[in-house]
Amino acid sequence: MKIPDKILIVDDDIILGESMVKILKSVGHQVDIANNGKAAKTMIQNQFYNLILLDMRLPDITGIELLSMINK
Image (cartoon, rainbow, N blue to C red; front, side):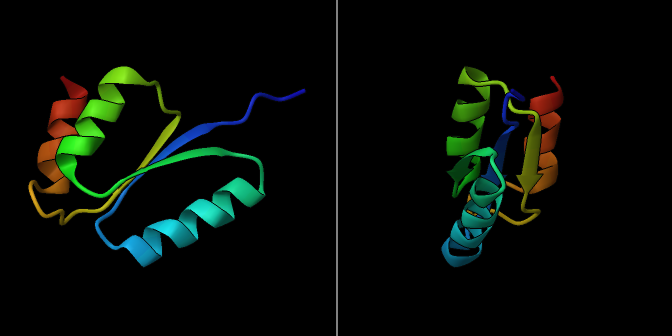
């Protein structure tokens, strides 16, 4: 049995984020969602993700800034 990939969606568009969650869960992935950079940073510090789908414009930080923090 294959272990499902853990995916984090970081997007402040709630409708788009929830749509992506439904699609990814329907094909067997474990999915979390964060609607801002602060929440995403906390989740990344506490959980390993195989894939992060990251919006470039968030209310509190840019996607590039968050990506830089993730890389550190």
